[in-house]
Length: 437
Ligand code: UD1
Ligand code: CA
Image (tube, rainbow, N blue to C red; front, side):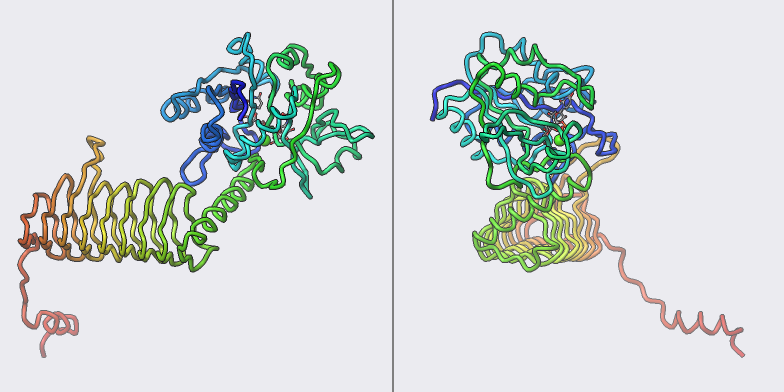
């Protein structure tokens, strides 16, 4: 552990033209968390960063709203117009005058970067007493990335963007991850010397390498073995690829912990979901957001858990069931065709097929909770209009609409009494066939 102060600059001002979207690129989500969220979390979880600066520009307000409502130690700085990644970093200069420490610069579109990697990266920079360290990785297909250029002594001397590269440079497979550790005192001057005489007419952050080499500073690259981590998202297809990578990691982690996943191709589980051993996940399950799931549960096929779920042990979540922000205690079943939202289910609760918690009032826009206590059950096709409580061991009759609390041990039923018209069908058939002859 080093004793230098470390701050970060996260580049998030670009439009993301290649996404072909009205939404800024960094607000596109994987498992309901924006790309930018993954990057800030990785920096925060490294435990090294004392303050994050997020450079915003395109749809700045939207990006700033996301940052402000989720991260108290991040400050947004406006870059307008967006003149390139180097110009973006230079917007933070006034906030870092006299700063004597390291600045880690990260692109907001590389969501797979891990906290431990950032830690080792900063340590590597520190141990080698470097002025500038650039994270790199080797790709068989390096298309779109900046290339790491070395001289004949293998010394790292520059980064060349794909659009500016010569055919020989294009053949280089070591690429720039877009993650930098900068000794601020010696290198920040580079940002006053950037030029935009390149193929894109932009001020490139990557040109600080050349500047540092020319100024005899110590420049090095930190080659990452796992190139997946630096995968940058520029298009919808890359967003889908990143989702797959993140999902595979998440499923591997769960299987290592003893969770049984029947079909890894059709199961999606967010990295922020914990599941205990011997729970079985059947095909076509989608679990997003933050959730806790206990042991010996059976989930799926075709279940959707949307975040904020706290599920105990021996719980059954069956097909076409959606769960949102709900607690479900041990030995309860929600086996078929139900929506459980903003609810609290005790233990040994049985939810009949097609039970719906009506939690949302679209006029007042208020969401209310449903409480179903230990041992209670609901019949098929019941609607529980929240706020409402079904007390211990109570029973809700099939097809009921429950608008008042149900007492413990009682049956609540709102169906009209059954009426039978004897031979009604026979009469209809006879009418249709021309009356009784
Ligand atoms: C950049 C690097 C490239 C590297 C790649 C890694 C430069 C010039 N190129 O290319 O060497 O291999 O990342 O993924 O840096 N942004 C701003 N303001 C701007 C322009 C961009 O904040 O004026 C932000 C974007 O929102 C994005 C990040 O900077 O989060 C990177 O920009 P992008 O256009 O994706 O750069 P690449 O072409 O991928
Ligand atoms: Ca990019």
